[in-house]
Image 1 (cartoon, rainbow, N blue to C red):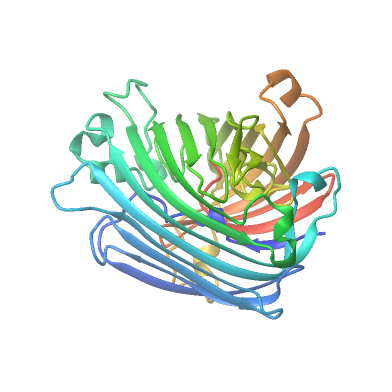
Image 2: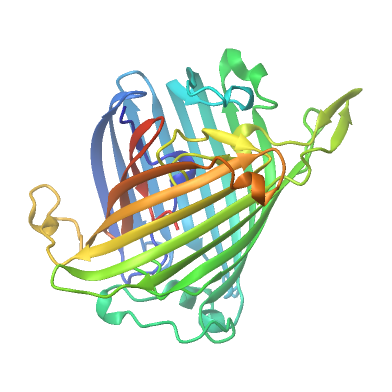
Length: 402
């Protein structure tokens, strides 16, 4: 059964980071219907260049017929005077779901989720240091600029970080909570406070419509724990590359994108004593290593599979049609929509209770799908339909999955 998920919490990302000049403020009302929320109505808004030229504000709120609601706020890419190599961002999310769908570790053999009232929240702060070489040699703001249309795209000529691309080191502090009410005892903890650091090298020729290059990153996450919950550590590695297939009369651009993501929990089998009791140093399902949802194994429910380790592959065939009628349609003609993109994708992945590449590639799960991506007022709007052996999902999201 198809399920619409409008901009899931962790998929709520910033407007695309290739800056546009000038001040731009837009509101976009929306409505949709889904199995878990009923009829929902809301409004989203974006403001760019209002406070600082490279910075943006983004917000979204909605309310549904079954009394579910969410709000999301973000302040992105702000700078402190004289700190030319740094960018700072803040995110906040809160949502109540009267018929939320959740998979807990012990129930993953079953295709039936726990359906219950729940509340989810997070607050994140990020500080990103742009190394002063490559695109960062002109400061952090220079790393946000890039081609905005096909005529400006150029092939990647070098993979030397000192010459090409952006190298960054990002620090994040996050508080996250998932309250399942009467079912809270089924999860190890309903709250985490984690610290993360990510080293990334982005050498795509565009973050919006890449046709060459790629991005690689390594991220470590750690919750120091407290007197009520044990500490834990996870790491993630991700790499994505793009290949230009060429243009023809039907398509202005054809691109093949390939991505691999893998993660592990090295503290998984370690124990910690709290109040005289021994606990494994493992994150709760919602904060640990998971597959299923908006970016990986998109044909499955969010968080469908979780365990110590995981591996995930995605392939996307992306095309920009020569035919683009959206700017002429009523109701949306006042919004800037310079292009739309058709996408066909295949996902594969698996989880396991130890990091063993042979086991992770055994009995892999698959999903297939298609979607449309639109650039709307500088934001990449993503509409994906994906199917798997357990059903299908239609999701409305922000930004590419990789």
